[in-house]
Amino acid sequence: MSLVSVSIMATVVEPSAPVGVIEQLMTQDHARLEGLLRAARRSDGTIDGAAYAVFRGDLLRHIAMEEKVLLPFARDKRGAPLAVAAQLRADHGEIAKLLVRSPSAAIVAAIEESLGRHNPIEEGPGGLYATCDALAGAEAERIVERLRAQPVVPQAKYYDGPLHRRGS
Ligand SMILES: [Fe+2]
Ligand SMILES: [Fe+2]
Image (cartoon, rainbow, N blue to C red):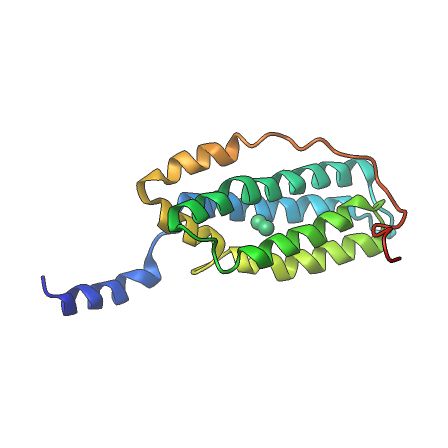
């Protein structure tokens, strides 16, 4: 087969390429987390603390799946961090700061806004998950096992004091 016909095939096949197992698992988790956060928001504007605590723990675990499994896997496979890694870690830091605070309508709105900007960087063609599926190839199921095995993150108490003592 000539190089020309291979490149034409790649052009034709790529848009309909099936979603990989890493992307399936992680995008389903995004949807599940969105549902948990919606469930924590009562119609009167107050927050269901028990439902929010489930969301908080599961989102922290989801972030750990990305920071402890996917980003290191991609870095090791490529020999260099993904271009998007620094942005994703910075976003995770911002989201984790919001999760430190006692839940309120304002905090929930800020988390929804952050996730609304963040999750599209990870989903879809060229996103973190599709990139990891492509890098993993036949190893993808093994990576999914590692993601599933990621332990529950112990939750700290809420803290509403200053986050930056130095310089504040
Ligand atoms: Fe993330
Ligand atoms: Fe994510």
